[in-house]
Length: 106
Image 1 (cartoon, rainbow, N blue to C red):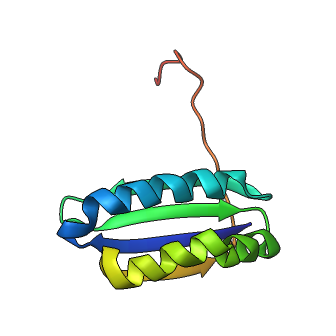
Image 2: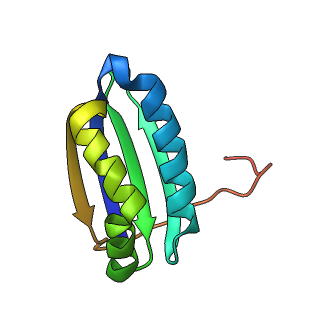
């Protein structure tokens, strides 16, 4: 598993064009072999965080290097973002918990 943590701040004037590109990049990522998930969150201070998971480093690299994604990266640097930070990670451990629906906690 390879996880990308993408933290960014948008330029106000880029919002509408950015949304079109972000929607397309989510669709494209989901169509890539080895894609696991993508989730994006926005904080009250304007920071956005996307967490993107791929099954392997090869799948992640294929996504990183996809020509359409490369164009989005260029547009991001030139037009969309005031700042961003990318961290590529592999999990050391994973723990899960899920409470069955309708079950009371005593």
